[in-house]
Length: 223
Image (tube, rainbow, N blue to C red):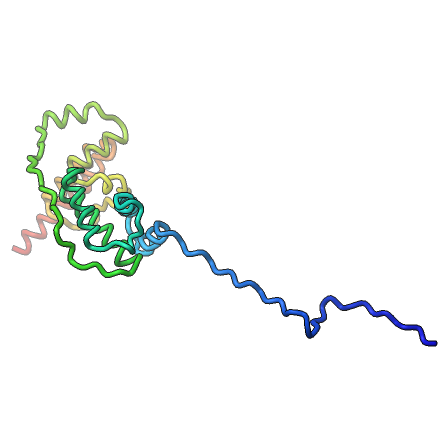
């Protein structure tokens, strides 16, 4: 009598009636709306200030319409939001235009939805504002209360006519005295340097004065 042999089942073997395991296909979740806006702005290399302003206006637009998705809205809702900014919030014309640009960026570059002409918008009135001009004595008195880096920045803003962010981003490499310029520009540059950098004023003034003399001699030769 033969002895029956018992074999262990191979766990790696696939039998006929056994269902074939299939790998579950996992799709990455779609990014949120504001994340898409962040990505679209940074792809186009907009400034951080513009990114912050656009995100703020898009949030206000969504909350103004009770958290409705922007795809469900169009020109009429945009007009209502912009009119509310002019009538209730009393914003300026430039602020209203910035809000409109933020919404147009959202629809064109993020949602891919074409927006036509927005009709019926109450435009914000431009308030007449007269510029406040300080006298030289007032400017000198103002600068006398400053010291250090703040005084240098304020002097550059007043003397060179730089904007605030231009002054904050100014580096030593941006100041170039090697190019031939007119005597008026050189004298203006000398005044700015002597105000901001009194220790280097002697060397800068001597080098720039020689450049000014060379420039005037060249102009006299041409004439």
